[in-house]
Length: 249
Image (cartoon, rainbow, N blue to C red; front, top):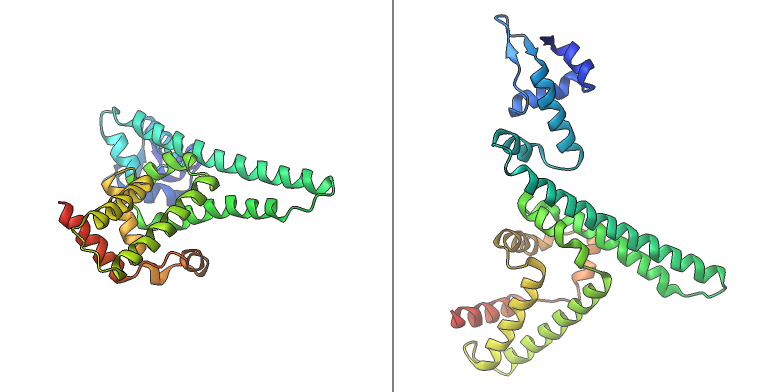
């Protein structure tokens, strides 16, 4: 048995961290009659698991649930985290590739500012996704991370154009007095749902987080507001599309 100071030195963590893990129920030591913590070799094994899972990015609340079960859910959680890291690696590789392409162009005397713009786009995509995490549950974040590798700057550009075209078409339909239950409005609603599903994958947790993000638009960072400026979805548009979707149901 080890007292807390001894155990902290043995495990390579701080006493403060051990206290925190105790409060969260991650590593629960025995207590002496005087209330002092006593740790065992079994606690060391548990702590090593906690530290390893935390190191690869799994939240502490999720770690407790994983370790307290029979272990059957751990492979799935590790798989989600692996896919998230693979997606981040792909974005880093894209950024490196864009920088290398720009380096080569400038060395050869070709002044192509479009290459510099591409570097910014790749890095901003990573930053924007990180900023938006607070709106999503941990489960939703894992699902978004696992699909991040598919979301290239080229795909972003294509989807942005589709949204701009759709917003213009919805505005035109409203001006023409189209019935939300009519064929044209139903086609617009179908396009709307398809574009949303392209990001959410139809997952209700991701969809819920996306709704929270847009509802908090007034508190977005300035650069995000600027990026969203062309996508002016008015309350009237929301109402029109909502009525069209309700009519479909």
